[in-house]
Amino acid sequence: MTSISLALIQMHCEKAAIEDNIKEMRRYLDQAKDAKADIVCFPEMNITGYIDPQQHPGAVISREHPAIKEITGLSREYHTTIIAGFVEENNAGKPFITQFVAQDGDILGYYRKRTIKDDETKWFSPGDDLPLFSHSGLKYGLSICADIDDENIFKELARKGAKIVIECAAPGLYGDQGTRNWQEGYDWWRDECFGKLGKYAAEYDLHIAIATQAGRTVDEDFPGGGYLFSPKGKCLAQSSDWEEGMLLAKIPVE
Image (cartoon, rainbow, N blue to C red):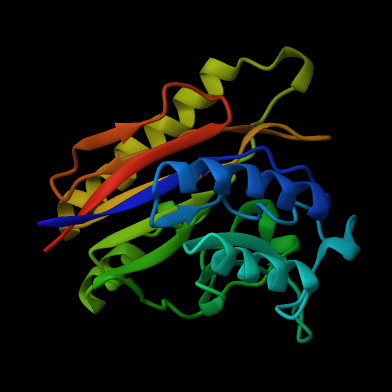
């Protein structure tokens, strides 16, 4: 049995700092190349940062934006598959929260976050599609952060034939930044992943992987955390703490 190597990136993504965030992506892509990763997965909104689009309209970008083209080019330069996220312009209303998949210089497709709730309803529109992607015969789907609360997304992806779902997340932490308890924030998100994604993995015979924004931005903190769950719901790999970094995990391909 062969396997696909998946690099899950816990990345600091400053808000509206597109050029700086792409530089950080290059640093992780170098690490992933050295580790011979087949797929490199970045967190939710890692290109634009987790922005309020009303405060940072210049960081709301289209699919034709130079940043998207640059990252697509990086997938060719590094001979890899890149999963990356941004705030996508929507001419018909509020922007979308979008992840796209680039492979060897081509864009394979986009997924727009379906679960828009709480404060996000003021800023973003939900997507309505659940695309499948493929790498060396391995079919996979994407979910984004609050999609963790919609079990039907994982059920539907499994029904379509996905063998793995990759969750790209940026769950902002509540509370004052000056008194932040990083362990507490990390433990909260870890418990969410174990309690929900571990359950879905076992229920729908899926591997589920998670890549999360990490660290402090100008006005918000993120808990970090990379994980891989088996189709039995067992955690096969996890990051050790809330710090930035890369978790390398292997997915068997039959």
